Image 1 (cartoon, helix red, strand yellow):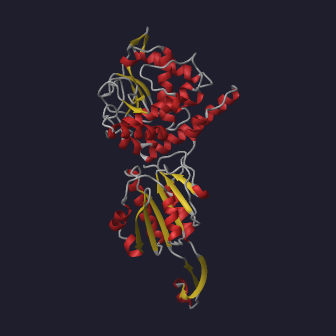
Image 2 (tube, helix red, strand yellow):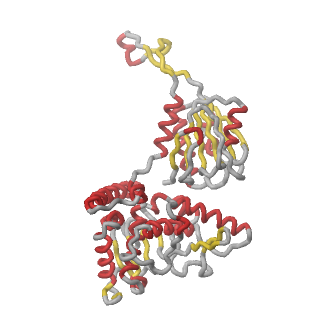
Image 3 (cartoon, one colour):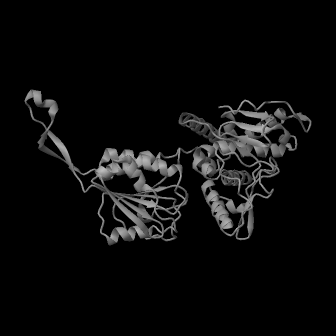
Length: 437
């Protein structure tokens, strides 16, 4: 997968070495140190090039590109740090896994992703191997956090800042294609977010270029990364090392939430199959043999609890709506009850088969109503108060709910969570992370 043709490779003398030689030296260091085996494994995925038309460095999620002018100002240790940085973005598949965040606010996403990968690099304890390049975003506060947690922290800080009239910093986010960051990218030179009196920079040292990877590309890259990391793990074990948990997590396959949704609802909605001669099997009529068929009796109600707090809007909501519509066309429950909730239940729609099979009407019914705080206990209280007995409940939420949610719903519940990585389903329900394609 290549970037645009205006990226040209050249030899630029850097600290006595041409830029491509310096980059190769950094590659060798990464591949020969047991602390960085697994990260360096992604050097086998895509291309690594020195180019003219990138101010610092960038990745499209597969390939890595380094600006010749930027490398001219770096030491070998700083170049090695930069290589690890770009490789980690590829290893973690940041640009492919978080397209919804890129579309919402590209600059905040870039910063969040950089804080996470730099935190992993700093945790290696490799001061003899690496040194922070200029502009590296590092903050111990985010140690152990994932991209979505950091992004949410910065996003809420930015919202509070804007509400207070502080528009400085974070104005340039949200461009289509995920391009942001780089030296001098902030509008006022101090792009950032202030939270509780502390300033968190969002001006990144590198760029994240739009990923044009197709689902097939993503699958191929994921398989290449997994194979490379497994091999790196074997090498690390032989040499007395081990892989960081963050790298193991990055190599783990993601669960397809659409398939999980299908399986959960279809299993929950199935009733007790029985035999009846009231409907005969037409395949055997010509043989004058009447075989029984099966029929299913079921309660026939599905509850969809829609979090309308505001942060579940966007492409992922559109994908959920489409997935649910296709599923209902297969399952055909007698009723679908849609509960819109934020801090309280804001509205309820009860749809019959005729209603929910009208795609336009169903899409309209799932549009969020409300937008205040988030208290999922309100849904539980509503279901209990109105004695709703359904086959199952699907909760669509960002996962940022009250600290001690009360959930006494007895029906099987599937939690589809769009943001909060640390969410734990109350009542022991099944939880699946939802990501937009």
